[in-house]
Image (tube, rainbow, N blue to C red; front, side, top):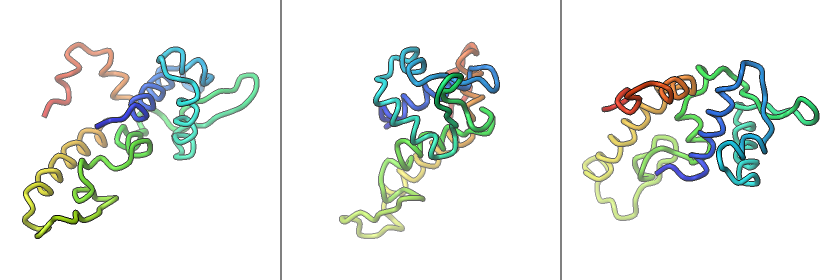
Length: 149
């Protein structure tokens, strides 16, 4: 499940993606526009900056801006940076695999196999979608149908 941290991060990134190329926004502006607690947003923006998705500048004319174009930023990357692996169970994760204590046979475990398919479906959608796609879809009629499985 997407946490508030992940949701707020996506909202902040969408806000920045909608700005004119090269424009920036102050953290307070982003927080107010998206109803995000400012201190929480500051921590989120720092993580996104450290991951190379944002750049920041202090002082007049400063603020946050995308470090790459919206087409280059994948939604799956944003979510992984903020919320960790996409897999619903650690035994189904590719990047943070941890075996379950109660698993008798990894190769035939129906729960792990099913959750691996869920992880793959989520990854296919989220890694196939850019920030640009999210901006476009948010303005398109029937946007909820564009990525139906």
